[in-house]
Length: 167
Image (cartoon, rainbow, N blue to C red; front, side, top):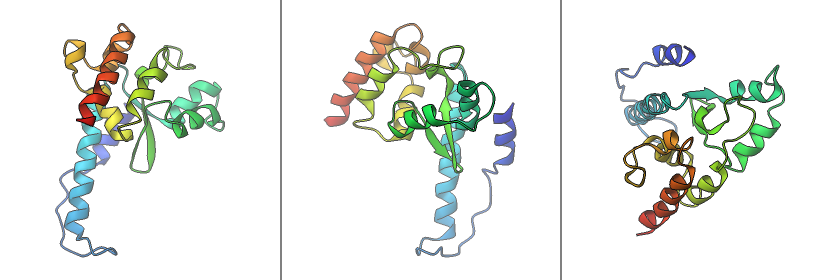
């Protein structure tokens, strides 16, 4: 529901203008980068839909506090330490919901071990993308979908990923 409203407010087809930005980068280049980032985010929304979707950090924090988003300290700590999957889009932090238990108050068991393997080699967007894409180690299922039923296999896939990236 909110994600649909968000998508409706994003104009992915804005015309490109040719004006130089403050760093000398053309406005067309900046708009092309923004278009790519918006397209990536829409892709993330679609990819995580089956495993619970994406939510803004403030929405997730409400689950932890039970009332308001004023105390984001546990979640903020996890984000800062990269103990949860998070990505920034349009100056907001977004989190895939599959990584939290069904009540939304604790992390899914095994997530920490998987992330510990991935954050060594990937940035936040790459980590989120890894969880969203089908993985051959998981019989072409996504790691996000597999965490609930095959956490040990997801960990093995993450460990294998380090060696693929290193090559």
